[in-house]
Structure formats: C-alpha cells, structure tokens
Image (cartoon, rainbow, N blue to C red):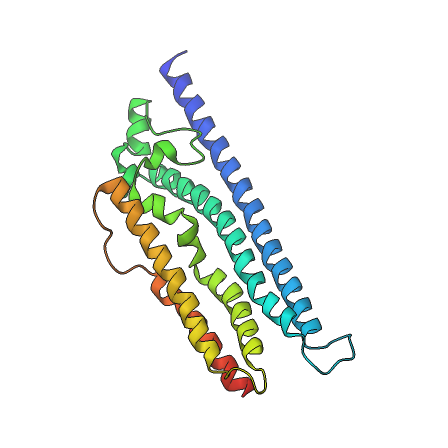
Length: 240
C-alpha cells in the first residue's frame, strides 16, 4: 500500500467516525427528551392524584406529594448519564474539527494539523477513538467535563428537573397547620448545597488524580446549583 492509499484510507476512517458520532449524538438527544418527557408525565400524575384529581377528595394525599419529590431526582441522575456520553462524543467531534481546521488548542494540540498531513501524506491523529481515550488521555478538564456530576449541573437539567423538584417541595410544605411554607426554601437550599458540595469534591478528586493539583476556582455550576432556591422562592410567593 502506497503512502497515498494509506492517507486516503485514514481520511475515509475519519469520515466514517464523524458519521458514527453524529448518529450517536442524535440518538442520545432523542433519549434525553424522552427521559424528560417521561419524568414530567410521572411527576404530573403524582401531583394531580396527590391534590385529589380523579379521587373526589378535597384532602391532599401528602404521601404522593412527597413521592413526587424523588421522581425528578431519580430521573436527573439517569439524565446525567446520557449527558455524560453525549459530552464524550461531542468532545471527540470537536477534536476532529480542530484537527481538520488546524487548531492546536487543548490537549489534542500535540498533533499536527490537517494541512501538514496533506503535505506529508501522513498524520498520527487517533482514528476511531469514539470515547476520546487516545485523544485526551488523562486530561483533567476532559475527565471532569464528561463526568455525571458535571453534566448534572448543566442549565437544561437544572431548569427541567430543578423546577419539578421545587414545585413538589412547595406543595409538600404548603400543609395547613403543619410546617411553614418558607421551610421549603431552606430544604431546597440544603439539597442544592449538598449536591454542589459533592460535585465540587468529585471535581477536585479528578484533578488531583490526573494532574496532582487542585482545579482552578470558578466552576460554572455554582450558579446552576442555587437556581433551585429561586424556583422555591417564586413558587412560595405565588402560592402564598
């Protein structure tokens, strides 16, 4: 096999990989919206029955309302798993795009650009590396970006599942003669703080294992972590 034939073969493999990545990301996006739709359906059913819809009762069934609290938490964790895989494929696609466009930024900058490969008819850029293992190696930024805890604090999951969780907490604490409704804000803040604390600890662990040092401050998940409190505050003010 000549150098020209070998080069064409590697380019064809790169094209095939891009097609595979696109198909996998499309499938994951479909699954993500199915998960979120199913979560919303189950949550709405529990809330409706818990508030007496279809039962003829005017007394809320607080056991069902409290059960609805755990529905978005469970589905958010499942969602983060799919989000993690999506990020794996997206980062690999980005690395290929950078290689083709001769960008030398990031951990994959150790390879020559596509223009150099055209001149020499050879490139050592990893092929069929769907998981990005050979592309990024032990890069802590990459490992953190594909972790489930990192994906859990993306804006869309926080808005989707955090809103449902806030709604459940508000309804659970609006119990006449029982606990004050403002306590929902405290509980929501505690939930957000604990989740953010665990995620921050996971992030530090990843960086210390991969790079032997602590990550730089300023994780963007800090704003998402406390969106739940805003949801709770608005819900309590609205419901009185």
